Image 1 (cartoon, rainbow, N blue to C red):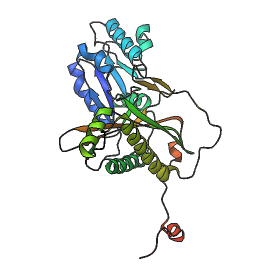
Image 2: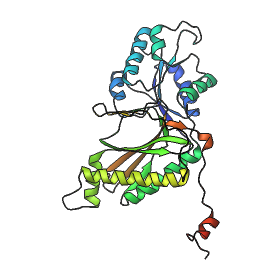
Image 3: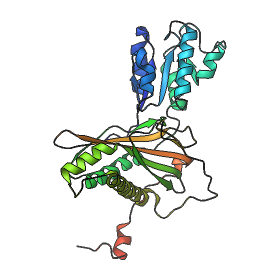
Length: 317
């Protein structure tokens, strides 16, 4: 797996003369641009699509005012997503941005130039730096745990990405804190209940069949195994120093929404487990470092073989 992070962005821009230039800049800087039919925009935004931001053109609607109203509706529905405006007829630095746009967007550009857009992407999409070694290591240890928990299934994964979504995927999720001297936050696993029940009944049948309690136990055990591997590899016995600040977590089950009290982008992994019948289980893994994040202090714990020999855990052949 490539350690390079990506982020999906929704592009609301119908100007074909700008499309190729925009796509080239996005792909050069780790963004995957997505388009949506206008009559499906709001319904798509209500789904579990993982997004890092939205780019909208001033000419997306019939007028600039209509485009601004669309942006405001998006903001009301998905306030966690940064919205970036491309001005079509006025320089971005002209200073005459209408109030409606000022309330909706976080950044503005006009010409599709690599450097100004890179600055916007770095500030509003990739605003947190995640070391490549950490991203790759999380993927490796999670894949190992999932392969052990679901030995009859084939594991596939997607390139890890940064998301700002606060929508919960599926009906069940687990949450466990992560604390060290370089990070404080949570790891979350999200999945759907029925595919796991069906898979267990096919490959590991039991008296009475699998139930939601079986799913809860399996997800809890999986979460604990990943947490233990993460702790051994990246935290060890170190605990976060200083006074522990906490923020309330908000969960709205009806809206499938969870908030960690921070607008920092989350590190997201998607794993798909498939059996011979083609049935699959999707598991979303998210890391939310909402309380403390110091990647410059990140270190991977490397066990010294000599120390393991001395402790009796290893011996010479």
